[in-house]
Length: 483
Length: 88
Image 1 (tube, chains in turn cyan, brown):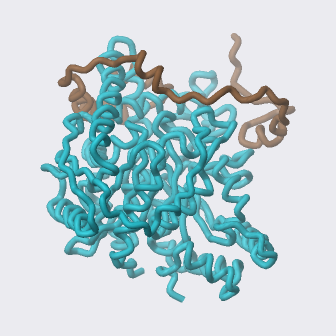
Image 2 (spheres, chains in turn brown, green; image 1 turned 90 degrees about the vertical axis):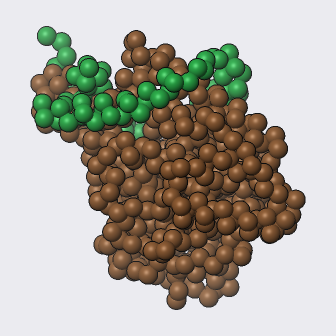
Image 3 (cartoon, rainbow over the protein chains, first blue to last red; image 1 turned 180 degrees about the horizontal axis):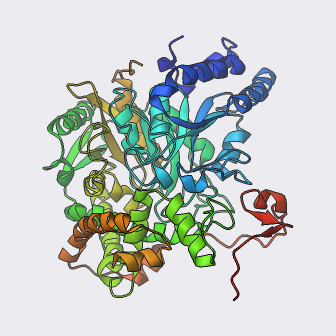
């Protein structure tokens, strides 16, 4: 069987027609994980016994004809999403032994659909990074070239879908952490509108920016998953009560007459020529489908990376203050006083990138610097949101490259935090403005590495960005990585 | 400055780690300084209007987590969190 062709839609049909059983399918994925994941390193924890139990329960539902859309679908879950009784590490020594006492709301929703969880996917430590090389446990490699990074922070989720070590996955996105690895690994990733999906049980990084979303083979699969995880949750006061759309409703409908805006700053210097040309070619493809392309501008883009890092690090420094080595998390063996114990536990438990973000956040919030940094970043957040609002007055969606370059090797950039931060330029504004965006593959560079484009939508208009991404995917033949 | 920030963040660094971190943070803060170039004011009033807040949920009695589940991730003794001596 060619697992690279297994979209959720295909698997749904195979399972419902009894061409394969849920336990057989699950075993197939577990065999692939055993065979390939020593190289790809996409999982921190594989849960084969639980997966088979899930699969047997799913098969009963399928046999009774009562299974939901995702019943029996083998999925990976990013390791910052709490899973009751199953280790959730956030790829950090700090949470190496942490067993959550409850499920995240998204897990409850997926379990209600009888998905099969194959395991917990690797990520950058505490979701801070764009390479998955800050993971304390599994430094994931790119299935298209194992000397290259898979992106991050949801690098394990994207790599396992790309390598068909799961049919789909959940990731989380604070500044591009779903879209950027999806682009690097040649799959499709959706960051929903802030407030569309509950964050209850998502280990907090930057609470005003974090969102959980799907990574899958295509936009249609993302639509199915989003429909299953979105919606009100009394445990998260920031989730919208707005009704959940049928995200498949617009799929396959003609996009003739739609208006797509291209902000010139996203195609300027600093964007790799092959990336720029490939995304522009995709824009022309849309034009041939009857879409009107509109040129526009986002003058504040050059300040976006700084604004994003100031806001997200400020929030992270506050969120991560809960790790004291007392209630849960790593506890140092050294420290006779309360203060020594906390400082040593955090010093030993957190990796370098997490420590840098805590220091930066404290700097931005500290007396004498607050107005100049954090206050200015909040002002820029408003400015960027206003610039998006102005652009959306004349268009339906916005098209940009997802990343300035294709996936780089594990030896590049990783040791230079400044270079790593600047590589987030194409994705961070979407989080800053609380918008939804989807990244899908639009081509490959000369070396065969995937190139992603992002379609950004108006708040809560996930249905349209899914429609636009799907329209491109319908005429595009993706390449599967050779493992 | 880094020592002060480390104290605020309750992070222990060795002298060598502190030196390396100081260089990296200097480079990072240079990038952050770009926000100083633009003349833009934060409008807290506008933000308050835009923030989405759900209605408060009903105050319904619900079960607490079982003590053993909460303490499974901590050093515990007789169902208590254990901390170093905090009173001299």
